[in-house]
Amino acid sequence: MRVRDRLGISGRRQKQVTRAMELGLVVILAIGLYDGNVGVVVNSAIALAITFLPAILERDYDIPMDAGLTLWITTAVFLHALGTIGPYRNPTLWWWDHVTHALSSSLVAAIGYATTRALDEHTEDVYFPPRFTFVFILLFVVAFGVVWEVIEFGVGGLASLLGSDKILTQFGLDDTMKDLMFDTVGGVLVAVWGTAYLSDVVGALTDRLDGRTRGAD
Image (tube, rainbow, N blue to C red; front, side, top):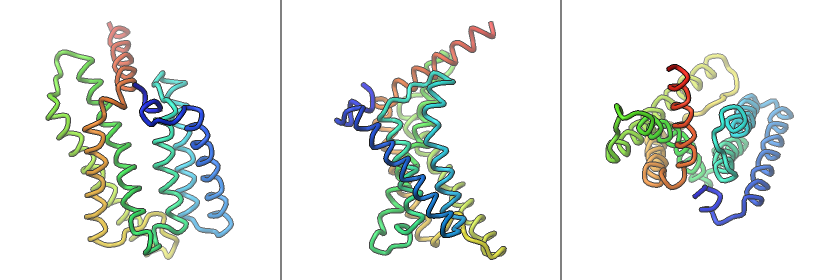
């Protein structure tokens, strides 16, 4: 069953929400340009570019990206970009950063899960037991989260040295540990429900691997 069917919302409505968030990203980008805020401009521009990936993957690589998956990706990048214009620094919205980390890490986990399952199904020489897959997804997400925190620290330090706006901001060790905790939450969600939501993507990746193998032969 596709993601759009499991969400209980029509594919048409999901596409409308996705388009609304894409328009919202354009507005956030315009706000960043108007205010001369480099961090907002860079984050919103990258987020807007990512929203085009589902269409590219489906058109050029035959990876099925239904309305639900597209909505998932767009929601993650939109909430992150929206956070740069205020919510990340608003004490009353302390939970915003945690939500965006969980969503973003779930996308990273989905990539790791789909790739692992595709390799498992592609060849009999590779077998990943369910428990190993679960642990691998968690380790994959946490490792990516650690790398991301290091990047945030480095970019923030460089911005301070140059006296420029911070593109990425780190709010201290306590915040970093909470980020990694919510990264793990996103990984757990995908590790538990990945089969239900990503089977079409796994099947398409497996077919592409099979096609490459036949082509090489």
